[in-house]
Length: 469
Image 1 (cartoon, rainbow, N blue to C red):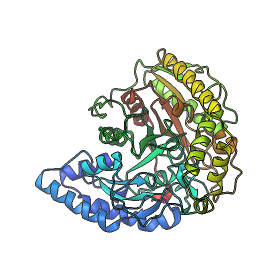
Image 2: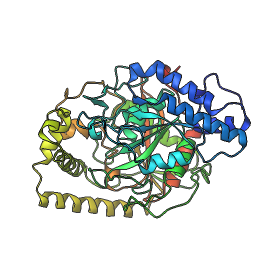
Image 3: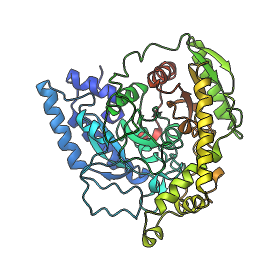
């Protein structure tokens, strides 16, 4: 394997191969990534906390294990970032909020953080999030305005926008994010990355999200192979999450190269209701679906047959925001992001009966999609209806349902149904902005989603943004 010019441009899979062959060490890779962070993060604001000394110490320990031939896990020496909603021992988890006091004990790792440490990953720091992960762009009064490596005037999306910008710019090949209505897939699509939302419960969580059972954890990566590698590690069990699935104990790299020949693919360019899909997005995704057909999939253009569930998503989300709001003191409430405050106040208007009705409608949607997926192996859509829009500070747009999620009609339905979904880059717009293709699988079949994404990626390799050069 040829040593690349800059190790920060390597995927996790590439780095592991270089470590095994002795062509590079975790120390060299971590130094390269930290140098990239030092150069680009002052502009991108992807990281809100960078742990230089701790990362280098972990890299030196990893290098020693490689030298002795005893790597401790599947991500031994791979630099990884963690979204600042996820507990990380020794580092403040500020959640993008002035309401969180950093001067308190931080002695607990969330399950994903614990699994990363056990697998030998080098933890770089925390990536930016809007306050409490409350929206599909990444800005907050605490950390400022995170920017897209492809175009600094554009948003990286959200709420895992810091993780997405970091991975796109080569500031670590893997970033762990959360996805409550598209918060992994939206920024991955906007930043030209692979973004995986596994089946709900596949990746254990602790503490559970105040936004309830729409919230998933998943990786941002430079490649599908890296996503499979990450899921193998992140899906290991943790007894603190009573909603988690039974342990799968599987390697998601097994069968990853099996292709899509013979798979039944439902191609739905609008899901039957999406308005305002950018023509360039629609055309790029149409071309991408033809690639799947060329690879041997049986593609049928068909809508899954449900109405836009935006009001279900928004209702449940706003009630979650209202619940969280009521954990804050009046003094804390006064310093929150005005967007979060608007969401919380909207949530205050829902009665218990309203919430129950929303959950019943959600159940109908879930049942419908379980039955639809008996006819098809995959449902394919655009990832987001538009390319990355202008980056604006918090509070600059009135936080209505349409402003919050109307431009991403393809993401939130599958948080409601809890199905696995992945976004893979499928082209660039005339402005040079990434476009994403979403592949949705049957509940629990995360391996199939990864396998199909890998087949597409093999035909259409991921490009890197010019800002990372």
